[in-house]
Image 1 (tube, chains in turn cyan, yellow, purple, orange):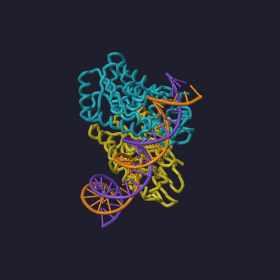
Image 2 (cartoon, rainbow over the protein chains, first blue to last red):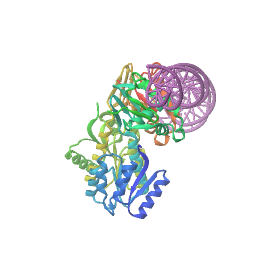
Image 3 (tube, helix red, strand yellow):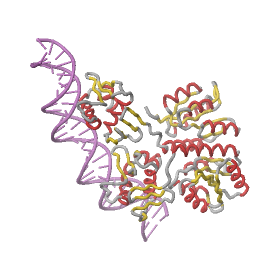
Image 4 (spheres, each protein chain N blue to C red):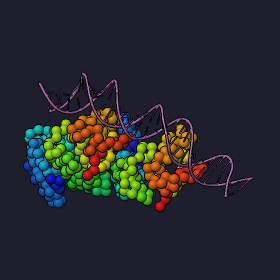
Length: 229
Length: 229
DNA sequence: ATTTTGTTTATGCGATTGATATATTGATGG
DNA sequence: CCATCAATATATCAATCGCATAAACAAAAT
């Protein structure tokens, strides 16, 4: 759902790839390796790696194309590796949106240090505050806060998870089992009463008149949904 | 008082200093140059430069000392210049808190590109560094002072960091892990009790009645935030 | 030498959650 | 239209969890 703690390595040279992979893993990072541009883009979208290590020279194109396409929608850090020492090339990469550039041959300790710097910075950036908006309901993921008609509403952790789940797709019906699995875990899919109780509590907080709910709607025999529009 | 659009150059070699200064000015930056460590620290506190270019080899000490003392309270970017190519030296600087490291001789275009990257990143983080004022509490980010009822309050370094972190975005909830990572480092993200203890100590200093805090608010299960004003 | 920080233990409090019981709703067939 | 039953909602209470704080002390830093 959110950022996975992965480092994506885009490198076609088998030796360097192995070297990077084992070094990073030894330092406690989870690593995913790809060798082609298209794979890289595909994986980036899916796993949202905490950081990408990118070799510029790839079999199916120039790595700088990767930077451009990623930077259209994400600020996650990219560290470029390249055989080229050319200053022009470095400047080009930086201006496309690379965060760092190491020319080969590089020391692995330096790379690891630069990775630490990038990761630390990301964690300080407090990420973006993605906010869900559904009618008068405002759900701030980063702050785990909810506002109703611009009034802050206090929710407990479970209540927040429930509401967040429903807000993934307003209007869509989530089955009891889906909600139980998402909030409590897959081993709780039969504890229907948990859901009832906490939905009740959630309504008590959000609904003016819980008996005739405006936001959290019941689909008898199936589950619940958040009012669309 | 607030962030001035200055770049601080800490460099004792006259030739390089001149070269940097004119290059940066030609590219539209305002520049302040100093040659000594003590001057550097002094100016940093006063002008809060958007970025610092730091030569490690200074007449009155090692530049890394500057990094350490600055990083105690500020995340403004620091780019290190050094004649040393030593990987160990680079790693040391990065881990102290440098944002980038260029070994001499370097290309001015590369330096300019790296400066652009750092500045772009800072502007995305949009942290505040002016004065937070709420009721009787005054946090002066530029001067690193805290006043309560116009009386200076003494805070320990950790207490400073904690409070400044919260003051980066009053009202925003910082998770336990974010605070632990920002103040102690990412390897401490699970030491929740550190946070509790020191928040308690901070409250003891700032809050009239620590049991019903006015400024430092708890978000149960998530983290802490500074009361918005 | 003094202040600051890390570590542990214990305790009280209030909020959250889970468990149980009871009430309410709403669809359906008589 | 009412009776019935299943599904849903709520009310109440107890167990648990998370938080705050204190105290005591060692270790580290200044």
